Length: 289
Length: 289
Image (tube, rainbow over all chains, first blue to last red; front, side):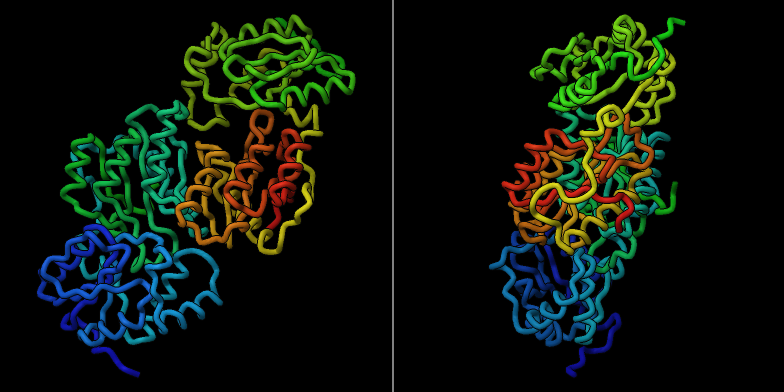
């Protein structure tokens, strides 16, 4: 077996990059601590993103063999996967032989749910001698800390909604459903599943526009939490300026996420946007209720 | 206290009517058994509905005092509430004094959730000497029976999805959220909250059109079940031709509902539509899993 170099701070970090600003932020934090990084931006996801001066190799999502070859050649052992992924169009998968044999095995045992698919990809990389890390392990700066991030505080009423939202997400966690709910006046208004947070928030805005919400404008909280057993190395709840926009458009009071288990993209712009919209952003303890 | 006549088969049945075809169906079934009925169609909900030859008094939703007066005058003691309600526009509420004093009391103790509001209205009618019944109690013909309703049977795969859906609804039941989920390949694709079943199904169709569903067309089940502690006299899960249309448009395999606790509007047209679309409709035991 073609062993990758031993893990440790010295080997260059391979970052498989989806879309958005997070991959570059992670690269900057890691590189700022003196560790070399090699980027692997994914076709169909990372186009239009800037990657500064970092070494990079564009790959299609199905080019698992190519990634392994290039990452080994660059001396990488630790691998991080970060950034927004959309379901790729079939032309953007381009599976190579390694990917095909992995897919065959994985689909044979497929039980549904993204967690399963991603964990299986993680095991494959581990079998090949890589060490898959969470972006938050190499760049903890991207995590939401405990407490209030923007100027507006969460009210007592908001805290009751947050507690109910966390309870709901805990109860539904075993089902590998969404990571988010909207709660207002101790009433669950929307539950996220496949559609994602942005679309759930758009739904709230639409229900409000149609007069179908009892909760007054300026009340209600977007609550996000990791699913039970979620592999945080692949898929962590995240918020960013767009989440704030969605929450403001839905006329909610604020955003509550689990501190230490939620990524914040562009913290500066996110907090500025929250302050402009007058909404709160708070990192809470998952057990709060 | 101005007592209404004693309950029993002999007193005329007051039916407060929302929209759709169910109120007339219930009136027909009850009247067919020789019991007199008096309809109270609600402004803003029941317009455009035909009510045959039945005696009727149009009321605004806030005219609680007027309803009580007219129902007593007609000799009614038993009251049924049936039909589709939309959140009324403020001009269609027209609260009278009785409604206002009830609202004041209710809102003071308001904890959110439709169940609470509706149960409180039920208690008010009971205090006034009426007996609030479920439409299914006076017209059990409107309930979905156990077993397969249309031609296409549910497959083993469908049954696994149904079991997961019922498990999910049981887990989320205590939260007074929706009554429905879409499950495909043992994966929860959508959870209904305030938006309602039709809009949740439209979301699935949209996700499918955008290539964001892994589940192939022709797989997946709409699963509906009553919430824990739901007052079935006011709000029961229901299906009808429009549900079938939504499921067909979302390209799911079928519909599973809890037998004996789900209303079927226009059973003939519903089953015909299901057969035309090649989808199954099945009444299951709530405990099935």
